[in-house]
Length: 58
Image 1 (spheres, rainbow, N blue to C red):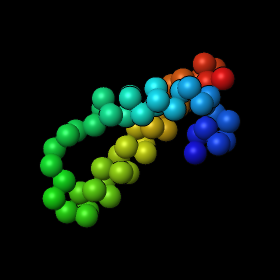
Image 2 (cartoon, rainbow, N blue to C red):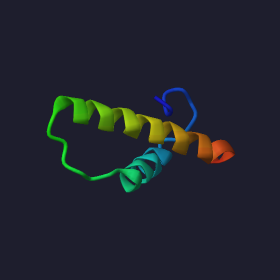
Image 3 (spheres, rainbow, N blue to C red):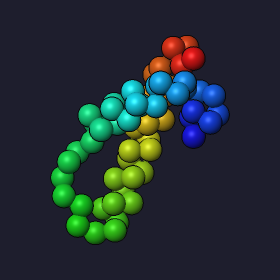
Image 4 (cartoon, helix red, strand yellow):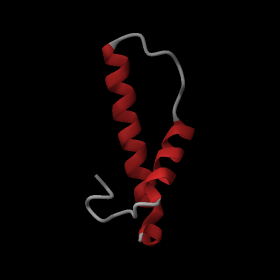
């Protein structure tokens, strides 16, 4: 979404993904609720990473 909105460049997509993965708690997800919660957290972390990139985003 951030790329399509022009907030990050194509090359920064991998940077955002790497940051989100680095923050991820790799505990086992045994229910759909666990997976939905992990997705929500990952999306929130991605948004934080994009904001922290600020003016470097292009």
